[in-house]
Length: 131
Image (cartoon, rainbow, N blue to C red; front, top):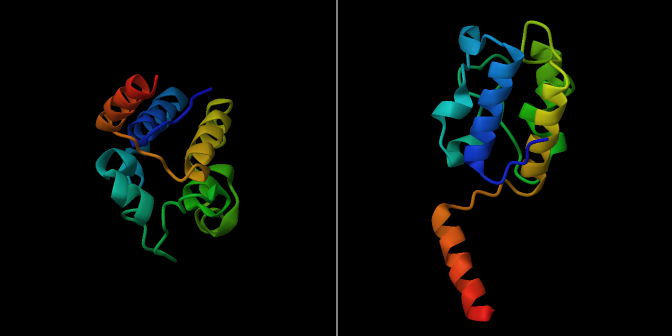
C-alpha cells in the first residue's frame, strides 16, 4: 500500500490510481485538478470547475473524515449525495480505490505534510551534528 509523505506523492498517487483503474477523467469538469494545483491551492482551495451546490473545499487539513475528496471517493457525505461516488462511471475501483483512500486519509490526518528536499537536507545535517 502507498504512503504519501508530501504533496508530490499525493499527486503521483492520484494519477497512478486514475491510470490503473482505467478512469477517463478528461470529461470531468474538474479534470486532473491535483496535477494543476500547487500545494497551497490543493490544501486550502475548492474543487475547480465544480460550482453546483458549492463551493466544495477539497480537504480539511488534519480531518480526513470531513474532507470532500475522501467523502466522495468513499461515496458518503454531501458531495457524494450531490454527485454520487467518484470516480465515474463504475466506482469503487478496488482494491486500488481503498488503498488510495487509506493513504490519502492518513496524509490529511497527519496535517498534509509537505517537506521539501531542502528540509530533508537540513535534517540530515542535524542528525550528523547530534550523532
